[in-house]
Length: 414
Image (cartoon, rainbow, N blue to C red; front, top):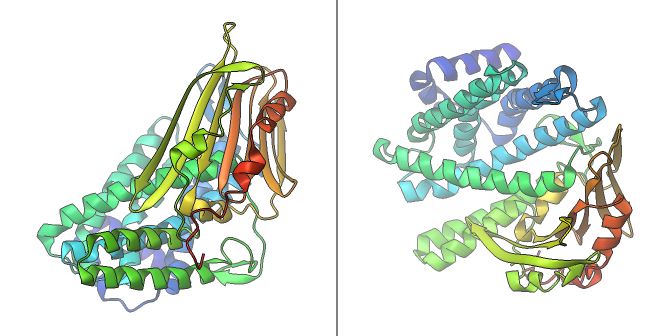
């Protein structure tokens, strides 16, 4: 790993991208070398900056003054953020590769990862500015915007698409990336809340992790992704739009570690929302199934409230093929607890399930979440006398019945 070479590449891609992209496209390299020799270092910048801002410097909150999270919590969040950045870069590269034929480009996974890694450089570097008061967010945002411009310049060189197709190629990639990251963070951070763990064993991107840990499983995932990629390529050659859609969904499922899973219909989830909860009648409910790039997630929500204004919100999510994100967050064997005055956050396992509790004693409000079968998340949030009341409320939901459906919709071979 040559730090001076990394610094020189960062300067060149940021300051002279038009001349640097042809150089980048012509360099012989591998996906592993890109991770070990560049991504592992530069992608660490936003995670480190976020830790400094949240745990060392602190964040100014209106009417609350400067707020800092604990060092342990900050470190845990930094690790999760770093892992998600690693995995996210690879998933976006898969998207760039899959879209190449659509814009008359050439499919090449290594070149796709080059396009992603070097265009993301602007955002990664600019994220350091979050430690600056007031201006930090604007600088980080400007870096992200500049990264879009870098991708626009780089796609014709890395993916060999015509220049006139680059704008559309860039736009579709960014839109899909945004949707994917929203999905990723909403699923992961909904449960993680404040951390993760990581061991040591096999190797990925220069880091050493346990074979059964999230990163250790990437070797197995890569084989599934490769097979799904071949299936997508065959579907594209056939010209069958339905086959292409199914193959793309399989690719996304493989990339996210979940395999091919058809989530439960929204109405199936809605049936698990009881008519009343903790003595409160159900005021409204909704259910929906969303899809993006062949990836589907189902959700059902209900609000329970009485005339005094007390309310609880119950949400059930079927993560479908995105269930691999739960493993990516490092849930296996991970537990933690944080206490700050009247606020308590805790993650633990009970009866083979992952539980998360969050309680604010000052406002008498909290959230209790359980993960079922590494696929479903069920959470209740709202007003209560204590966290035990929320725990009891969630126990009224047919958790065993929902958990029993964990293999429904899972396609053969997953």
